[in-house]
Length: 364
Image (cartoon, rainbow, N blue to C red; front, side):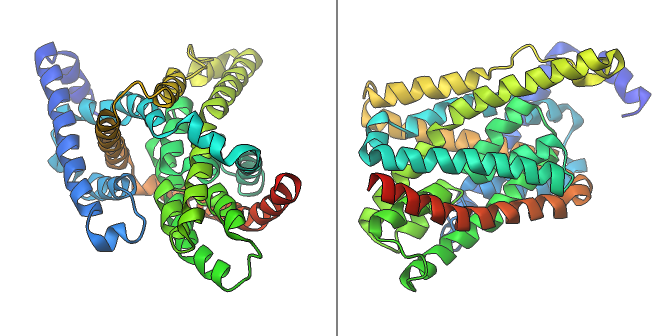
């Protein structure tokens, strides 16, 4: 940004700044509304592409091709949608999970989820940083999207890590590619008898290893209603694990920042100082809403409405992240991030099958 722009920004009246931010939020909301309609088109919905995925793709296209058409004063509203609104929406995501549902699949479902999430996060972070030479944030975001709940996990981790938008875009790209592939490949492998799983095992495997909730439902519905029920609950158990994982990652990031700051004062001055909030409050909000949903405090109609609004808010956040993403930044690490996603995909199939067989043998 030029000196003239900086000077103009510093002398901009507060009212004009607030109006610009509100216009930016309204713009993102209208954009997200259009995205929601596009995602509802049968051809798009049939691919298991949620509004969140369509939002970041459409936002990135606009951000790179037509960004100059948006007034500069709206940027604050776009940033608000990609950051603060995102945290609120992730917290409300907890209304989709209940402790009663998780209890239905019992120890096998919980064991499947914990083993998949922990192993995928460890393998993804290690492979991304050590083998593919990615930065820590990109490796973690890619691993989180594969391990927990796809785009929603990427959003939650992006907020905790305070990473750049293009890193989230790369992680979401991996979720789209390999999650969509799973939705079509898994039912074929199951019906061909190559997975050697019964209906319960298929539910555990599908719910434990496919990236997005919609993709899990899409794949398991090609097996049986029972498999779909089990797979959905196992998937939501993985979503539930977002809270403890975010707490651990938050503390780890803060500890690393303290160590880097202590190692060199100059580094600390350039952005490696420890963050004030190592534990993400929205993760605690997520847990609180899980409890509220489990206690059936809200009427079912209210919960349904809130979930619909939450999906729209997440779509706004994804769209805003897309608008802030630059293709030139993705090109630098895109192939390496995608290869990391492929390594994780191979692990989810091979390692996931091994974990499923072990869990069924021990607890079945």
